[in-house]
Image (cartoon, rainbow, N blue to C red; front, top):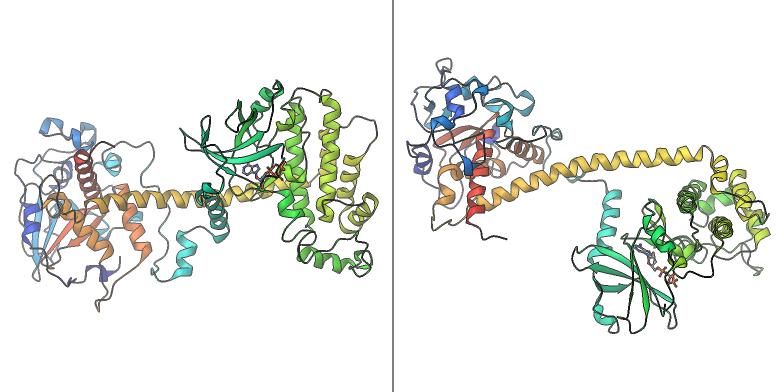
Length: 597
Ligand SMILES: Nc1ncnc2c1ncn2[C@@H]1O[C@H](COP(=O)(O)OP(=O)(O)OP(=O)(O)O)[C@@H](O)[C@H]1O
């Protein structure tokens, strides 16, 4: 621990009196004896030549480390369990004056092998009552000291280091923000005065696309009125016929590459007889059509070219050599083969699940496949099956699904929604691997022989493993981030508690509540955390140190910390376990005083 943390601190506007520390120290003598003092009482201070005098104070140790404050034992009979092997003895708290500064500590503090500046890594079997104490009283199913290691010291201003150690990489953050933006940036619904306020249990209907005047179907994002979850609704206009029983089978399909159908209902809320299909909403999704075949980067985009153009001035890719093709990939005019395989592997996985369920997709086209991040999903699955007739031959519909996948793959290869088949195949042959060409040819085949989606597996071959490996690598990165964010969440909760307690002007008509008793320790701890200064009085900011201290507080570690009063006359030597107990007790008091939520 940096020694500067103990340097004198002189706040500009007035200091609390030292008597506040004394208030804390002189709390009611009826306070029951607690484990810390009991266990450590036998340890003497004589070993330390630095200290000049020793005073016994009866009630230094905060109450009960073994249960929530509301069930705090008030008598020796309720003392910590015998399994703790704590010899009953009088707690000892010592007060020492060294160079004009008074130190308060319990004798066990001196026994800590790590001394006053013990670190988490040095956590010894300090007599705080074992692991139960580390959990701060409430038994926990996991080891509370298991948190991310403290990163090396760094200053709050050192942004690059901070970003790497405490925050998620920009790539993941961008993905998360994109999704949040989709969900949190609300559309002004006054733009859509004709939309009903709610349809069954779904409100805040926001169109997902601008509907054509005589559209047969429209899609919305909506919020479930009870759960507040977002859903994607597909409204089939004027659907007066019967509803196919197949939709019940579609509802059972739960696959990572198929958008899940949850419920179906008919409604007159749109002033007609509409059928509404309710799907999972995947924020930030764009259709394959939008992402690859239209708009920026696609064939319809700026720097791409149509290889089948009749315009004599158009670039003629047929005459280009391999490097021209590579340039086209680099500029986004062509999709890298790996990306194509990723799309195809995911779509074949979706088709496999759908066909195995005895269904057919019937709508596998670029506008009905959505992409979010690296995930590809078949959207509005089952919507084409809403009416019972006329799609009766499932086998034939499944064959048509394969052909639709072939057409989609070919469109992606040439980055154009429409293309001349022979010319497009020629281009695929020149640009991509033979495996990809053969897969597309197989899919587009019109031969009467029945094909199955599982036949595609040998053609996909080892590329399947590449996909699995890529997904696992991504999962690894996200798991690492999750662990970090879980720690950040934990630290935020503890900061929220500290913030609610520190400097509270009054509680239950007691204006001195936050300045006395346990709360005073917490105030000094807050000063220690946030208001430390360097030798020349400048703020000492080290986020690694802050995280380390908060982690120790959360874990209720037995390591010790020196808290100096603002007038620099007193130093309180306490363990994080004590501080944790103080925080839990103070927050519990606040909770009891708060109105029920
Ligand atoms: N489950 C979903 N979650 C989030 N967004 C989705 C979902 N399904 C589709 N979308 C998005 O909704 C938008 C509109 O989809 P929709 O299928 O209505 O488009 P469309 O091309 O206008 O088709 P149509 O003319 O048949 O309605 C697309 O941009 C698509 O990315």
